[in-house]
Length: 249
Image (cartoon, one colour):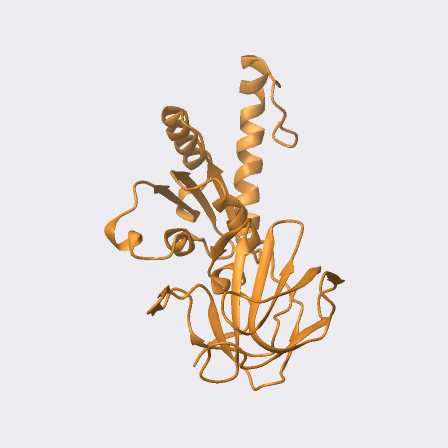
């Protein structure tokens, strides 16, 4: 019944009651199979009908083994959450592999896309080692750090982590920068480059060398500044690509 969902589909109460026992058994079996999988599942319940949402959450917990389901309702932003990056409370709530999470409440609609990007499996990292010298959200004189700084000797090759269009740009300060964008709304920005290895506007594939690290612009030494965006919304690269080889300095 849930294999194909289209607006306007209806079944009779009799058909529903007859299908429920099999559906419940299939759902629980799928849940137990998931415990051995290398990915989690998020059930995202959205909309303005809070009564219906509560009924849906209760029904899911009733039909599944509630021991392996995490339910999180995102209400108003608290004081601690307000001081954190926009997606902080979402990242903290992501379920581990093999578990199911039910999310409901007032998160921005675009967060669903961010969550999917974080869960669908990660492409190869742009560098062999990603030693973070300054994390996302770190306080600075100009505000919170909008990306991560990665230790890299000058001239280190930077690979494309996914297929996309590579662009050259200069930010609002001196220095070479580059961007890699996909059609699904994922973009990474690279700063302090010493040289470009692909033309501006070139289509590249995962693994291609995009540029060389450097120390152009305002910096105390050679490194790569990396930012990540989903549909124009800046997010923490560590949260968006959790399986990359991140290391603390």
